[in-house]
Amino acid sequence: MKKMTLEIPENIDLDEQDAKRFLAAKLYEVGKLSLGQAADLAGLSKIAFSEILKDYNVSLVNYSPSDISRDAAQI
Image 1 (cartoon, helix red, strand yellow):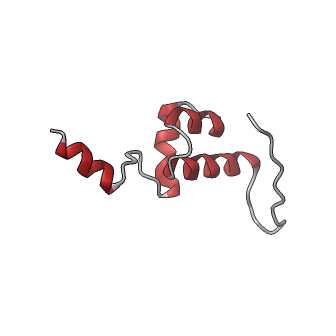
Image 2: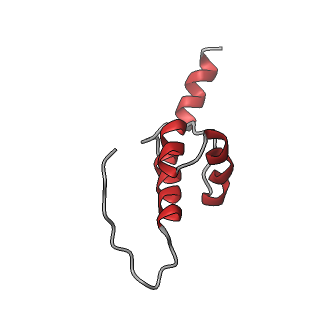
């Protein structure tokens, strides 16, 4: 994995674990990471990661409307 350093303002209450989970959830949401990759980044199992997605308003089912329409047309 790549290592990155972020500078976060002192007045923001965010520790490293929270930042990793937030980033993992958002990268999963936009399709940049699979569920397993995002769980690894967050330092959680897939099940535990899937349970925290709601904390970041991220759906576990990550299909776009066009994907749903395409899949429905193949049935």
